Length: 514
Image (cartoon, rainbow, N blue to C red; front, side, top):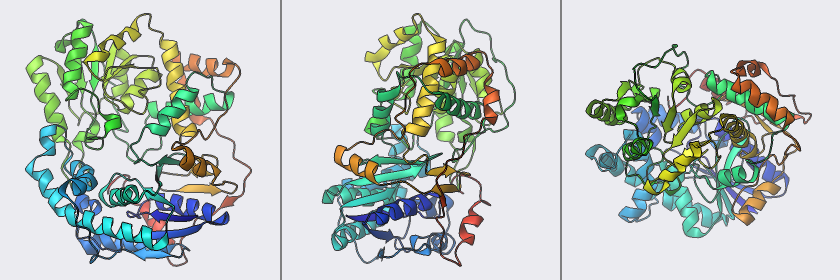
């Protein structure tokens, strides 16, 4: 099989994951072909988010590019090659980048002058990348393509070229551990994840699985987990800030990454519509509510503005309706608020998982990673309001149990090759021998990935003990649990001599888009 690899934003740790996959395919007789940007586009997400020119940013991509590894068959994109795209085709390629670069929140933000200006800048990128991807696919007779991310502009142009050519593609993202893979969809897909959750959410975890999930959960609650960007890592203890008959905590999320994605789109035109409908159904008032603005909104990401668009929406609603607002800049501990709350209303953020781990009544207003896991009441539109009956005879122990099962599915069943790609840091993985491509080829055939770990326990005895510890607030003891090292020999995914310093340099940069 002729397999293509498009890692068009290479100055990130995921490039080692791509090389690992390519070497795995090559060992089994498949041919590899790589696509490289080669500073061919006038503007891109990477440059715009940092507001830097070609010399500063394109030089990083060139230094970190695929041909600094021991690979062959590298195609450099050419700026002279362009496709005449319709306005709709170009929009589908560049919309998500333009939304993220402006950190939009509402439908009105999506058509603002700022957003349309960014889209104009990115149209040449769409035309160049799409044309080069089509030629790359044709010239090499590609039968399968791996794409980093698939959401942002250049990777999305390759995705659209694969769709036009009818070539199956797999998008990949970093996972801790393993590699998050999805077939024929971008990195925001819920297809494989929700199938895997559905297959395993009703089965107990083994001793190892329970302890693994417990450690992930404890690290989440203590802000020590591996994620690309952590916020409010040194929170201050806090108590409920107002007197009210009920304590309803609202923890909104940013919309820019998921705007327009069908799998993540609820019926609500805006989350505030859902909040108001839920409050009415509960017989509650906005004056019962505390809104904890996301710490993300107070931070600049790269050179772009902070999340004031998102915060503004909730501040204005709180001021109109008598809700208490906690600004994004506050150091207050959101988990302290969750513990005191009667209800926690979220869209799709991690506060919903943390609420589940703490045995709370969580209401989700949008599809999410965990919306099919059974520990929240999902109310995606007015027709779902009866789902609040989930809280009749509420079982907080079962909520904790299902939250832990979700975490295990998310971290060890959904990502692939978790025993062969293990996290050292957010920048670096350790790789181990013994993986094969059979699971990927099955996914190509079935259009969905199977679970990486299919084990289930025959009895919940070990899971019961872990659940009880969380119910009793004794989760910190799992922070020091150690997973036993595997027996497979380690393999090294290194750049060519003379380029290995590049990966060492990455650790000096702040996590995220800096």
